[in-house]
Length: 207
Image 1 (cartoon, helix red, strand yellow):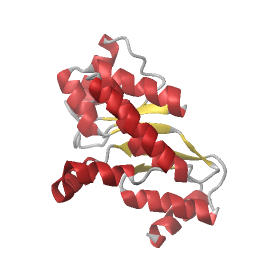
Image 2 (cartoon, rainbow, N blue to C red):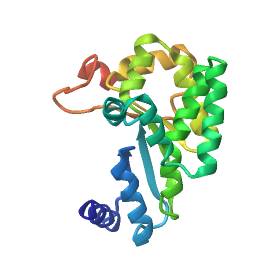
Image 3 (tube, rainbow, N blue to C red):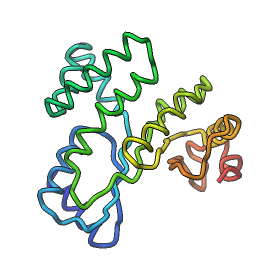
């Protein structure tokens, strides 16, 4: 981990303005170390990608669902933990998927907000492609729109989406009347069209 911290600090000194990372537990330690070192320049921008899907699957397999919930909650301060449990419980009782989604976002993101270096800002919060592309396939625009609204209102950051299907993403957002200009999109662009769905030509036409 120390070598990763040194690389980020060296990159910042060389002009890098931000760090995009998954919500893997090691990145929580990295941010804490960067905060402790005080080496980052002012206005260093952070772009977390969530959820850390692989980690949740592993924890659920190892510790069961109750163990998964307990370990995730343990990352939060006591007051934040209690608030999250109450909000999640009310959403579950109301069978409110949007409320559950918001509670989950706060549960995963808040530890990184709490530990981030003081001179850094959360520029955008990006939804992992596992969730984004599933919502696109199901045409669940309501969930994507609610995610974007929550990130803007609570974290004052740009909502972001990771997708391997830029063409479908743009089509769905435009058909739903959702703005594209104020969001961040992470998607593959390369000369051979690797992971560019539906095709390199169609993806380039949507830029």
